[in-house]
Length: 320
Image 1 (cartoon, one colour):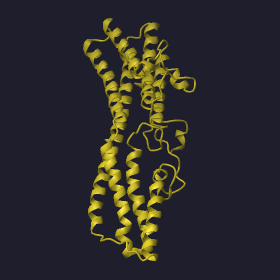
Image 2: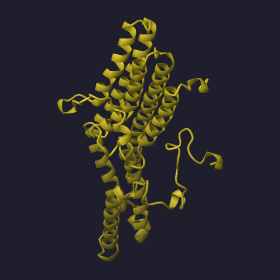
Image 3: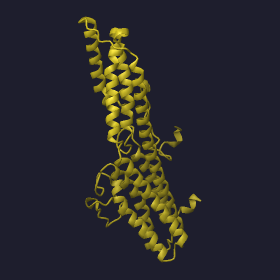
Image 4: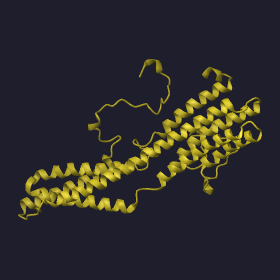
């Protein structure tokens, strides 16, 4: 990063990354799924050790033909590929929705500051209010997707200062705060249209941008509230368990005690892939692998409020 960009720059928060002290191949805690799969790995490792011990020391031949393993491995591979591809599609769709919402907020803010009627002090105060409301919608969508209900409190002053005075919030009645804030923006557009400040095509375009925000928010709700079907998850877990349980019996004759680390490695690989699918299935949380919504919103807030402050001081021509 150039030294001249010490304070800030576009995407400052969302692009910031800590230097890596360890190569990714040697990381086992932060950002990995190892903590969630350690249980199955330990279980199948001990189970394999028990199978090998019985086979080697109690004179009980537990080996079975290894011809069945390839058939099971194909099924396991197909299930895991579908699971991970479906989860990543949800992750990528969620990231696109965030981008669409931020772009719509940028477009509406720019249009309101430069094209809306702002001759009187009252008009300028209304424009400032609606621009801050647009930024507040970003925070409200983030909080709604994380089940963080209610109006912002003192713990988030950046968010609290953006919510218009008089908004009470009706989430305890089942109304999402993003929808309530959208009423403030729609009211501003309708008021401008009635006064003749926005022509019909302009008002329609602005309403379309606002509708795009709500549409993307609805799509993000769909991702959050529609998990992978439970029948698929049950069958995948059962097939994966069946494969890992059968594996020690199919390799014990050929590998003896080497079967233990082999099963550990295979279990680590398969359950790791399955764990990644679970990790990114809902990308709107606070995990390291989730979408950096806090940072993206903070960057959007920074750039819009800087432009708003320049507009309030009559310096919008400096950006032209």
